Length: 248
Image 1 (cartoon, one colour):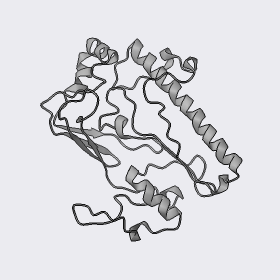
Image 2: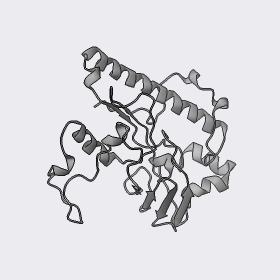
Image 3: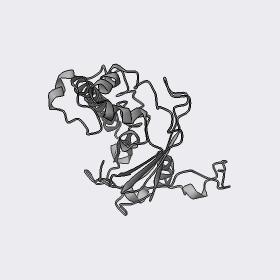
Image 4: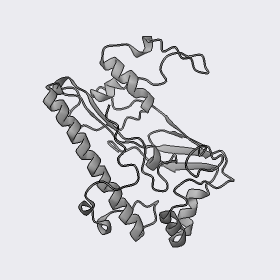
């Protein structure tokens, strides 16, 4: 396993000249300011730096002579630390990059809109290795009395036998214990291919974290208070229509 901390803040890696802030497309849920664009350019530069590290890992595999017998999985941790991303259950916070290279099994350039969760990765790798994940006794039992893994194998998605997997995926978030987090601001979400539902259990309180006190967010509040306020003051329930796009 190679676990880089890029593109975690501070965004101080990569070639800052690769991305012109004025040319970037700012997502509609963000406030378009000069500082927003500059920070996005810093973020993208660090992602490109991470790409170079992935390339170095692939080169190691190439030189080992084991490329044809090696499955490579690239996965990101969560969304960025911009408002409405990390620390939230919006798509911009929960969707993660996930790329698999499996020679002669996964077609190059293939994409899938199948929904999965991180708990599904281990059972998938076990099945690929020839084991039956459902027959393995993990020694753990959930509240319903079920033993085994929390996840399931999506091997058939990887080899193109199916393009769907989970009907629903779930999200959990709390500000307890995070940097400058609210004392208690718990959120839960459920999503299918077309809709996202979020419930904020302590919606009467304001949401806070390290972002809400940042210069960027303070600028958002002064530039577009209505948009920025939606980040810290949320309704009890959010319903959103947001269809899954293959590869996104």
